[in-house]
Image (cartoon, rainbow, N blue to C red):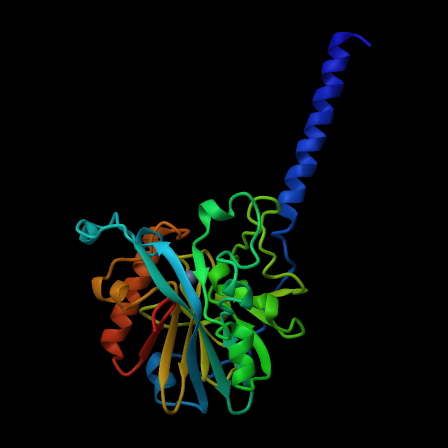
Length: 310
Ligand SMILES: [Zn+2]
C-alpha cells in the first residue's frame, strides 16, 4: 500500500471513530417530542380570566438547597448591578403541587431526588459535572418522592418550567406512565461521558406546549389554557431558557404565578435585574422579568412564587 493510500485509510478510520463518539455523546440528549394538544379556551383576556376563579389550589415545597454563584442567577453586567458582588449563595430548589377538584394533582417541576442527601451532584456523572454544576444538599425526607408520599398524592402529570437539572433531577423517582409537559424547543442537556444526568430516562415522549395555539396575555406573550376551564395556564417566557414556561393558577382562594427561573427570588424581583449567565438569552430574560413586574403592578392580588425562594 502506498503512503497516500495509507493516510486516506487512517483518516477515514479516525473520522468514523470521531463521528461515532459524537453520536454517542449527543444521542442521550434526544428524546421523542409531541405537541401537547390544548383544549379549546373560552377566555380572551386577564380581566375575564381573573373574574372567573376555579377550584384549584397550589402548595410549594423546597426539595433541597443549591449552592451557586450569584452571577449564575442574576445578570451582574446589568447597569444596576455594579455594586453587587458575585458571592456564592444558597437557594432552595422549589416544586409546587397543584390540585384541581376535577382533574386531580399535578406537579410543577420535579426538584431534587433523594440522592442529594449523600451526593452534592445527585445522579449526575461525567467529567464536566464538578466544573459546571452547582452543589446540592438536602435534609433526609425532603426529596420530591418523600413530599408526594407525605401528602398522599397520586400524580396525574408533571408540568415543567424548563429542563435545567435542578428542575428535573427528581423525575428519576417519579412514575413514568404520566404525561411530562415542557415548552416548545426547550433543550435537554444530557451529554454522555461529559455531563450525564439521565434525569428524563424512562419518559417515552415529552409533550411540548405550542404557544401559537394560545391567546395574547399582555404584558406577557401568549398563554395556553391547559385544562380548558381557565383554571391553569402556561405563559410563554422564553429567555432564561429557550422554551421556559411560567404557570398561572387561577384559584378561588389564591391566584398565583409560578415564575420558575424567569424570576429566581424576591431580591431579583425587587432589584429588577434579570437572570444571569445560565440564561439562553440574557436580554429576553430581562424583558420577561420586567413584564412580571408590570403584571404585578396591574394585578397586585396575584401572588408570585419564585423558582428559588420560599
Ligand atoms: Zn433553577
